[in-house]
Length: 264
Image 1 (cartoon, rainbow, N blue to C red):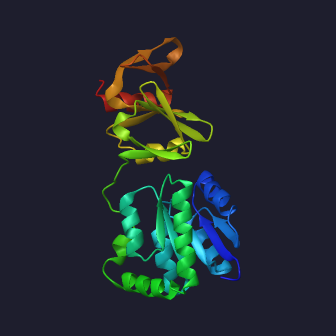
Image 2: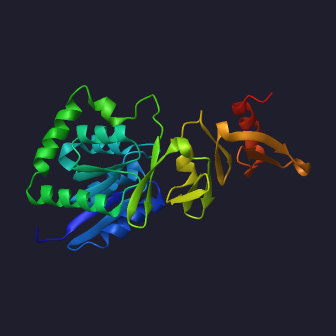
C-alpha cells in the first residue's frame, strides 16, 4: 500500500484511546485520521475523514460500536477492528464482518497481529467482501441482536495483566479487593498486587455485583471476604476483611453495602 494507512480511534475511555494511539504512533506508513469518544461522534468522524481502518470500542454509553456500524451501513463503514471487554461481543463483531477484534486488556503482540491482518485485508482490496457480509447481516433477522448488547449481563471471570512483557490471566474469583492508584487499578490477591490500566468505574460495571461491591471511590471489595463493618466516631465507616485488611467505606455507599451483606 503506497499511501499511508489512515486510522481512526473510537473509545469513550481516554486511557484506552491513548493506548491505541501510542501503539499506532510506533507504526510506519500510517497516520491517525482522528479520534472520537462517543458513537455519534464516531459516525461523524468516519463520514468526514473516511479512514481506511477504525479501532472501534463495542461498549460505549449511548450508541454502541455495533450500532455505529449499523447506522453507517456497509457502503460507508471502513475496515474495522472491534475493541471489547467481553468475548460474546467479539463474536457479535465477527457477525457484523469486522476484520478482527481486541479483547481488553490486550498486549502489544495481539495488537500487532490485528493491525497486520487489517493491512493485508485492505491491501488485497478485501474490504468490498467485508461490506457485502455487513450488508447481509444488517438485512437479516440477526441485525438487531448484533447492534445491541444482550439483555442478560455477562461479567468478567478473568482479567489479563501485563507483567514484564508477559500476560498473566487472573481469575476474578481469586481477587480479595481492588484499589485505585492513579490511572491504574491494583488487584490484591493474598500478598500479591497486580496493576491493570483500568478505571474503577469500568471495573465496577464489569464485575458481578453479587460478588463485588464498590465501597469507596478508590476501593472495590469481594463481598464474601467482608468479616466486620466498623463504625468509628464522627460517622466514618470501614470494613475489615478476613485477612485483617481494613478498607474505608464512603458514607454514601454504607447503606448499599449493608443491604448487600444482609445487615438489618
